[in-house]
Amino acid sequence: MVINVVILAAGQGKRMNSALPKVLHPLAGKPLLGHVLDTARAIGAGHICVVYGHGGEQVQARLNAPDVTWVNQSPQLGTGHAVLQAMPQLVPTMPSLTLVLYGDVPLIQASTLQRLLDVAVQGAQSEPGAKGSTQGALALLTANLDNPQGYGRIVREADTGKVTCIVEEKDASDAQRQIHEINTGILVAPTEALSRWLPTLGNRNAQGEYYLTDIVAMAVAEGLPVVTAQPEVAWETEGVNSKVQLAALERIYQRKIADTLLNAGVSLADPARIDVRGQLTCGRDVFIDANNLFEGQVTLADNVRIGANCVLKNCHIFEGAVIAPFCHIEDADVGPDCRIGPYARLRPGTELGRDVHIGNFVEVKNSTIADHSKANHLAYIGDATIGQRVNVGAGTITCNYDGANKFRTVIEDDVFIGSDTQLVAPVTVGCGATLGAGTTLTKDAPPDQLTISRTKQLSIAGWKRPVKQKKD
Image 1 (spheres, rainbow, N blue to C red):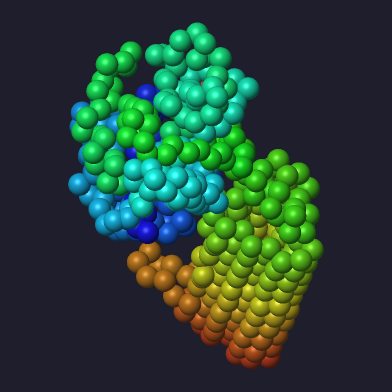
Image 2: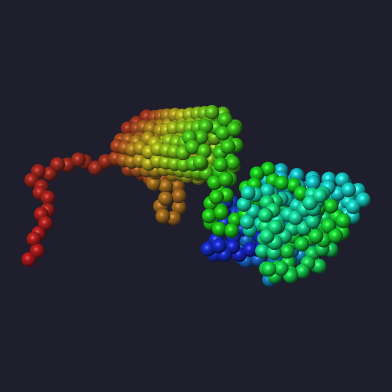
């Protein structure tokens, strides 16, 4: 059966108090609409259509989704009117179901939507004589809330429990406002039936809008079964209309990730203080301290330890490595048993071998450092190839940029570089060489020799410091 998905994303989001379209506000580093699109793809949608409005060009450019059909809703006259704009773009193949989602409801789970789709198919089959039984039933995702204020209510027959209609709160009677089963807005309907119902919607209601929920009464009138399903947890259907709500969903999302990590055996110092904005993959016996941020694709192998207040983005940390607090690692590979930080920065293109030590206030960029080498203090290593068992002294820098072009520094195995050394690339330091402290190296250093570049030390007798002159 073909599954169409229509995502309503035309709202301006005035309560966000932002020039950014509401569906582009990030949750866990991804736009709200991006989460919904990923979920739609996860259930195998045959066709996805997004109905946009405010900031449509910006939304399309940011999402860059070639598998999506974009439809503009202008003017914006309600949810029923929005789905009507999408109908010409949907696959009409029989049988075909259309699932309606919302671009500002980012946490809906694929498992819940699959259950709703299953209910739509099974609901029609359970009433073989009903109209449209070969297509599917109208399936509504509902939820029971202690405080249903603001939501449309599900009205059922008292004796059979069958759904008869949905009443929006502004149009509900006092008795209907006491109903706790609410409409989440997410539904599945036979595509052919939607094509009949939507053009006949009216707008005689408190909002003067064309409500999608009015199709429930139309289905009942036709004898098409109306069935319901509920989400596993209520927060799946919570929407975002303000920064307060966005922040609340962020914590829900992050706590869900933290629980998944804990159940997989990862040790978290504080599950409430971890943020994952991408995918974090962990091996066995990984420890993550508080206030860490993981972005993009991050892999932590067995026995890795991450100290507090680190930022890791698109990196692979191999087994046994220890990342001390306050480190930034981006687009880098950290080899087995390495020791990084505290206060170290590994920039894109960094590849560290086994048992490499990168200490406090050391920055490495676009460089490879082989096994058992170390730069423990206050150094910059850029565009360099460093061999095994190299010691890089404090204050050492590779001068890799002449203002227009970058050049590479090669440091071979077993080199010792004294403190406060500058290596002016392109330059090679031969195997086993030693560079004296304070050297500015502008030519290749031969293997197994001491190379030193230093002005002669002088002591000038009788020299006196200048004295500040008094003003008249």
